Length: 181
Image (cartoon, rainbow, N blue to C red; front, side, top):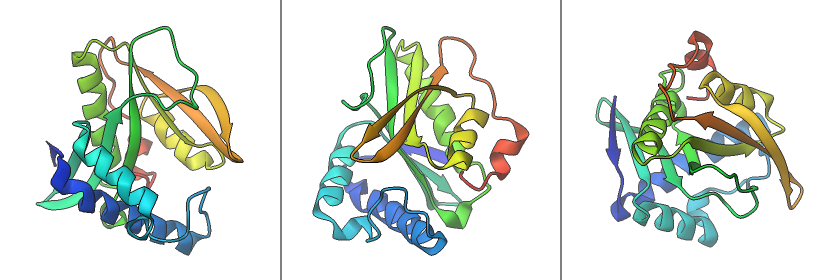
């Protein structure tokens, strides 16, 4: 697996990954607060992907030369409580269902943790849909611990924290078979 830095030309790649994720969620009947339409058809999602691609924090995972996932490393969103320690925040993480079970999400998280540590951060944080226990568990298998919750327009969020000021542990064996990454 190769993980490369993304750039402005990758906005379409990010949208394609999210379109795949939306299709998978619609098919399973578990939208979790996301729109049921592809991100590429929603102006605010296109603008968000464009911003992420230009942010300097986009990472693209490739398997056999094919895009398999993306992660955006950036700043804490305003709806998540601040912490007193230095941190980096995973703003977005999405993987292609074509590569499910191949460890793409875990590899992207490990890359983010390493970059956070190299930048002098103590913590790497992320939030996800709290009403998806398998997703919360997947992050816990990557080494994250639950550290707070929030509600945003009826959407229940779970904040998770990973200490990165020491060695970053490999995920548990069950993490790669969860279907998330």
